[in-house]
Image: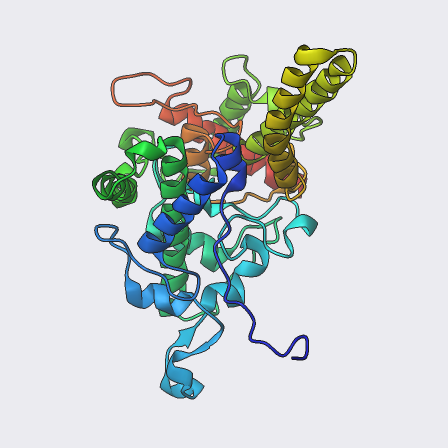
Length: 393
């Protein structure tokens, strides 16, 4: 048989080995997890929507699989297939892990959907994004990143990509929860309950949208002088010790240092650091064993044999990881605001912070509890940021 004449293997979802190896899972447990996830969610070519998730199979089928058209019919007679692979997988990867073929060349790296953490959304920090939040990012893209606008796609195609993004996130969140759960507790009842719990977080998103105090909303008919006054008050708040904006963004809104990692790079960095420490410890132990003799040496060498395979597994994972990136505070002088530049967009990012990043929340965490800033003060900071960026243009 000639090499290269066989049919290519169908794509598979990649396991989250950084997570499973980090938790000490055995190869048998990893295999069992892979089978469980396949039973629940299917494969990249044949997705499944677990009961109770609310995922629409028709939309998943449009986004999943190889690029083409339904039933191999002409383009004008059938719905498209493979939209995710056509438009998204090059950066975000088949699994939605942010490890597509182009990922290493991009900064910031593509989003890893599996954690269900999204930076630019309208909901509270710990809530899932709404469908409209995902749709907006897909339609508008993210300025100053490699994420382009897909506004030329039909509405049903965008809906399919939104649904498939939710699907990859729910699958990844279930995987993360299962890895954290003792394998002895895995059974149909507990797994189904876990899927329902994850799905419920997404169902609640529309109820978790951040709505400003109506009395704090800036009037639409404000004069330039009123806006300038508000911006001056916002600048004072921005520079204040209470707000702490300067610690990351600098006095002029131009950050001059990068010292913190976001959640995605932190997990990567911690895994690398622990792996390096274990390798150093094992090397030192080998050196110590060389000076032993007899039964003590035999027992020590047996222990080394036990420690070596887990370390090799960790090192194999490290070899596949992207280099950790420091979180980059927004440079306000550029006038570019990712995730929307409307006042309400900036308000929500200041009020709730940006999930997965060091950017903290400044607004009230819940009714009746004061935040670092009032809603009115947050809108004043928004006026300052928008006015300052315009003045620099």
